[in-house]
Length: 223
Image (tube, rainbow, N blue to C red):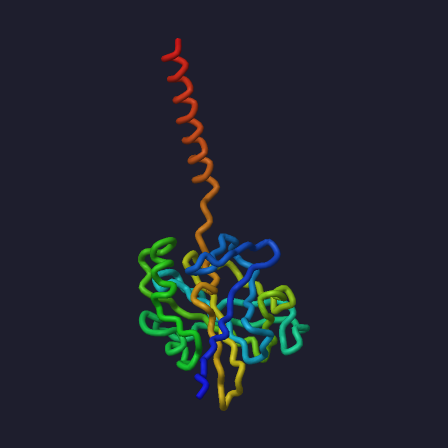
């Protein structure tokens, strides 16, 4: 008897326009804030109810909502996009899988909190113990495969707190028989803190001073 193999069809973030990001094996980080982004699906294309979830570190000031706009939405990738991401729960996600927290426990692949929290703590927000989740439902949407990402949907959002992760879900089934596809762990779009220009200037000046001091010392010894 042939063995039945279960296949996961994860979503994965990409950047476009003036934004740049690349999967580093843990997340897909960007220092462009606000980002221009979207998600692809493999294999694809696939159509279904499309959710965008914004994971904000739970020790940061929380916004009321996030506005998500864009283009090439809808079931034919030819509609404008305008939606509001609202707080899913007043209780932060601090344990378990994201799908369970959002009430879609069958979503695959699963994403336990540890997939992203350790990265947030190590790079931008050591005090975070979880995330508040803001969710926008973009409705029935065609999501493209990796090779045709720019066919849409293409999304925009306002400035985000460093340490924030953007994920997505697509129900490729029906409301009665859902087939929720989640974001691959490394496919979550991660917002890095952008170094302040003043800090970079001071760092460059310090390095220049060290170099000049070293050169002056060498000349004195040579003389």
